[in-house]
Length: 179
Length: 176
Image 1: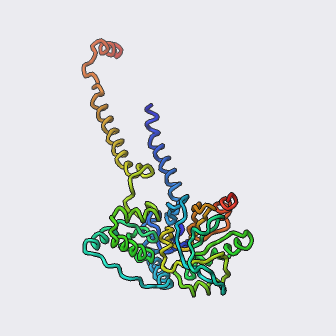
Image 2 (image 1 turned 30 degrees about the vertical axis):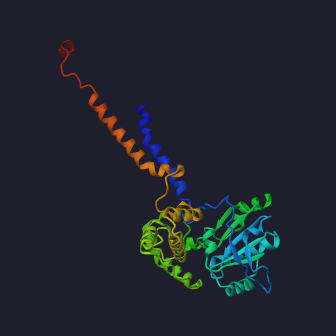
Image 3 (image 1 turned 135 degrees about the horizontal axis):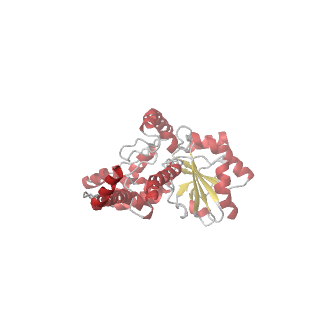
């Protein structure tokens, strides 16, 4: 019993080491979203017409897109990191026929159109969140952020920062596959 | 800590305070400010209508902001932060206060979107009870350890001062 008492500090140390091992590998800039497994916010946003298309109606309610899983990607032409994930989004849309809805965050329509014309347009639909109000409803605190919405319109995953192929394989593909 | 290589503005715009400490933050502060300013000027500045508040609402608004955390520069409150998002959230809070929402309602509005993280003072609930109760638990363990130690020391019987004459004689006999 006495012996065990001497081991106590060692046990406390082991506990602390374990705590730090977990804690130090967490990225505090990634704040978990409380919206996971909740219905996606029903934002109504104007449609950004790209490459000459004219869309009717001019406003789109995001909840109207239910029925099959989709990615909702917040981006902006002024966002440097969005450029990093753009090629992968193009590849997803082209090769995996993933339906991606782009939300152009705090941007001008003109700049976004030019950006998409220059870099390619992976989006099935682009909506304009000109003042960032929809961003607040979605808990967006920077761009890019990408949400996976299932067929029932429920948010199943949130990617903070650029969506990489590894992240897609690990977190997104299983959700799209199971529908 | 993904600060410099970070790509999400939350990672780029500000150092996180928790890990590497103040020195890193000091070192990155100019970068942080630069990036904040750069992204602010790159973003489109649209003017929104001013929201008038009554003096009481103004007081409520001013009291609320320091309790709310900016998610971009995480060690700053909404009243301090220069990040564009903080400006948007201030505007949102101002709008809610103008519509007569209580402090609790405003906080709930933000927590629903950004999680408990927006509150500098986390709520007491199962996932945080250790956080709140931890210091008291540690103090209780320490105090009871000290108490047990002291009591044992008092109760320990003192060595008998009187010498047993029999054994003394035996010892002396051996000496001879």
